Length: 117
Image: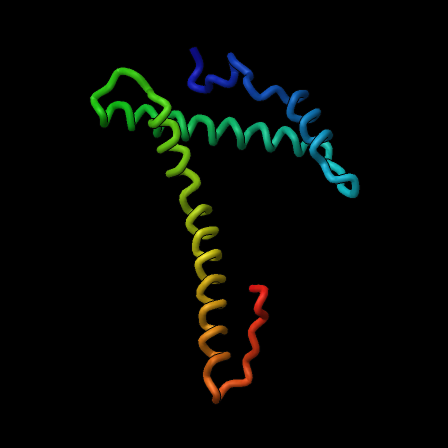
């Protein structure tokens, strides 16, 4: 067996990815020739990273079985930087609204607040 399981198995068939992208694509955009192959490679890499972390999670639990929770935890760990940025942006937006409301109440500022916010 090869070190690269994707040589033997192909869960991300390039023709399937190409069809998916064609269906999902915006009408005003086109896909360059082999861009679907790059996406395929990245999906394979992420899959192996998540599976590797999932196995480590199972071993840390002294388990011989990779459970759904192991995969979910691994997935969350891989994508944590992105979810953290998203959460921070939402929180900062909420803070901005509160700052504007507070500033609008102060008689020394010219800040106006849209009541719909």
